[in-house]
Image (cartoon, rainbow, N blue to C red):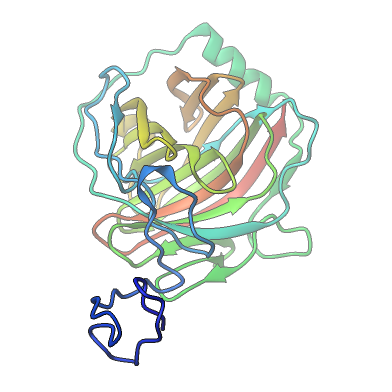
Length: 310
């Protein structure tokens, strides 16, 4: 190992550099890099710390924070996302990434009021033929997802579904697909088997510097956040609690629909409207299925994925 100050070789186990007496600083393991401050590029590897998002009370105007760490999610049981209009097929492979998260707080209960626009957007998607339809029961030759794991987290197939799991407090496991375009729709059932949170990340760039994250827990508490790690700006676009809408609990599947068309996002839970948001920060990127270990080991099972191009 070389000294970071004078570049001289340091004997293994030494506490200081014998040449310049500078203290030896340990380097993180390759699978657990700390995200640099100020939005510097993330180091290569399969696992990263990501920016921290403190939880925000529901129905408040969107806020921005400047901190390090990642948004703690809530639990995903089903999701549909619309990001079409680019004429590209959706990605055919997945990779796993681990991000640092922080504890989520509590929030109040809300009664969503659906707009005509939101219902029309949902009906339009449901009347289209999916570009991709995958049960996620196994890794066939045309499977969208690959199997990937490390000491504390994994993305893989088990019991006829696709599992994202994490056993590392304060981290999230992100299993993402490649080459998603601007406007499309994706639908997936998600089953929070144990632990804290499940989430859907979308419009994420290659370095995971920019992305949106929709997340919820077993009590039906949720939030949608936009993250720009280059400037450490994290905008809370929507948050609240809808336990009746989710009917969420461990071992139960929930169908979530998230439509992203240009700058408009619509979210539906079990075919019922939850919320809608307008934001134009990010226009293209990857989609990810995620498990979040906020305080406890977490495992989430995903099944019956459908994706539509718009």
